[in-house]
Image (tube, rainbow, N blue to C red):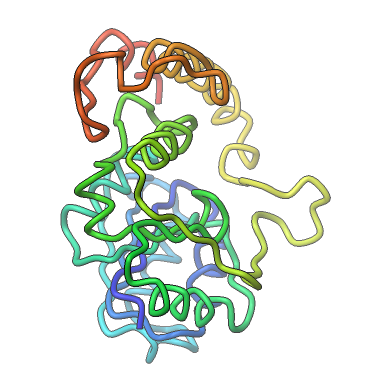
Length: 248
């Protein structure tokens, strides 16, 4: 059984519903973070349907919790899930569709690798983190708002921490639109205004990553965050940077 499955969502309630109904393995706690602040009718409708258990696979979820927020952002949403629910934590994008048997494969990997801190089914699109990894690697750096580069930062800290990370052989899923040759996230691509804002904040996040690590991903120079004598869990809120990204 998966202890906690956390799914943040901003738009495309149809994808959220698809994600949840594609689950074919027991889950103790399903936690959905509705980052639309309840203003997206499609997401609200999907959340209500799931909360009422009007889904064919409702019996697989022991507990279902929907939390409505004003766009926490990707990393902060994950942090909220970690802080308020028991681990290990399986995190999934709302535009993921699990193919039959894949979650059972993931659960099996967890059982066979009790010393693993991170289980990477598809990078940070679908990943599991254990309490041990949270202790050694830490929470997501919330300066990466609302999304992008938070995964690069966390993975670098994972590698530098030396904690064991494993994959899930045979894991299969669909990310985004079925049949889309480009694949990938459909959250910002579904909305021109979100796409415009994302272009600004992603560049800002790139620049912050370079400041934090002395280079962009794969070209980092610093062995510790900010090149300071600190551990991998350390990050500090950069108010100037966050204000630049406060356009959502």
